[in-house]
Length: 102
Image 1 (cartoon, rainbow, N blue to C red):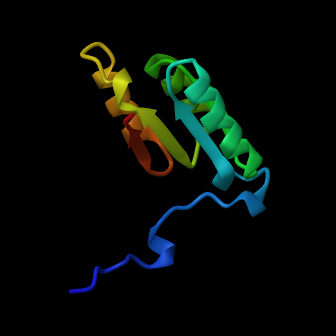
Image 2 (image 1 turned 90 degrees about the vertical axis):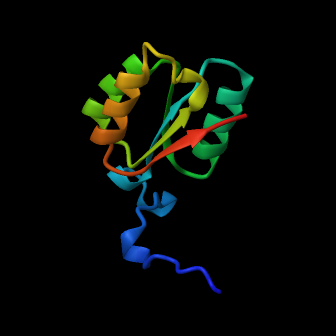
């Protein structure tokens, strides 16, 4: 049985070729450290406008102001205190929110 893939129009994807547009904005929500730094650098080297923050609360403000096309969220930030904020981020984001786990 082959997997059904969605049409390209149904999958929001950030395209580095659209430099300066909202399509290339990526918000990385990850605790400060080498993993966040290297991940953010990798995204930037591919041409994505990338903001990296360490808390869900700061990320929520950035989602409101910056409207990223993709949100990458480290699941380690999903504590009882930040779970509601993370839900708000998912609801407000202009594109998908991807949960990262190490």
